[in-house]
Amino acid sequence: MKNQLVKYWKISAGKESIFWKDFVNNNFAAFGEWDEGNLDQYKDQKKKLVERLKKYSIKTWPKKYSQGSTSGYQLWNFYDSLKPGDILILYGKLSIFAIGEVTGRYWYEEAPNDECGYPHRVPVKWAVPEYPITNLSKNLIKKLSKPTDTFHEIKSLENIVQLKKIYENIADPSRVKDVPNDWDKAECYFAVWGYDQIDIGDYTTKQEIIRDISELIGRTEKSVEYKLQNVSHFDQRPREQKPFAEKRNAQKLLGQVFKWYWSDREKARKSYSDFEQLLQIRDKSDFQGDISDVKKSTSTLFVEEGQLTKSQQGQRKRSRKLLEEGRKHFK
Image (cartoon, rainbow, N blue to C red; front, side, top):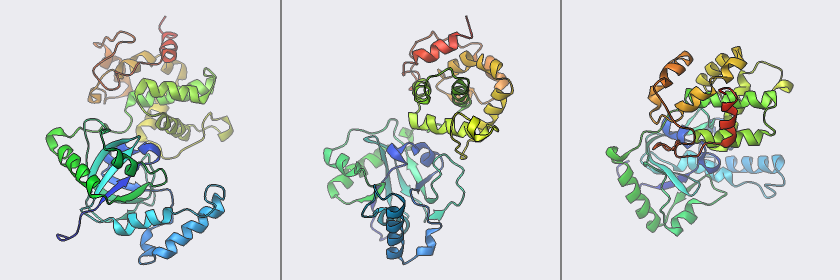
């Protein structure tokens, strides 16, 4: 291992790396477009895996992969070529979200219980910059942005030198930013609230509520959409009565908020303003109690509507429509 040449690899956490916090919070990297079971069954059988995925892609998506997908090569490299000590670049949206060192070998997660849900994994010790890094050379951006590649090696010496400097800089513990955990109670409230709004017909389209909640809480629209589908998992009504398709990979806290909200939907809607104010708090540790603690947590918090705070979430202008919805309950 001491004489092993350290390699640099680019990896994306889903489309535009929407699951990057999942990777960082749980200290892993994952590959998941193709679930062929535990890849140990293909040990020393690269050709077999590649050909199997190629045939499968032609049969399943003939228009997209008329000649067969080459993802088998990526998956094989993730399984066989990625080694402990190698460096991973977590990239998406023209930004580096984190850089980490692989600390162990591949494992297969048979039933993932996190948001990304990808089964093929390696353990990683991540270093996270205070803000996503966008100041990169054109050549490096071009190499990292290959649209067809979720995972590939960075071989250019010029690019490796640049990435090494970035990694050394952000790996300094005094400069590493704490990554927030999964959705907090306020964010879960707005996911359930949005689900409720579509269910009662207060919004014209699903995309409209997804966009507005995204602007309010500072999450991507894709992440919001996924969470609304998670809410559907806790809705015990028949599928045809649910406003969103179901995604079972749901957060436990979301289920608790849903149970509370759905026990008295009309009353829960009136908590809109309390939860909205909680979004102005940068340190979410102030809000770790029970749902009943909401009013107590906000009793000394006064934020003028439309005001911007120093927090990254507060710097986003809140959606006008969501503010109007909140005012309905507090005239």
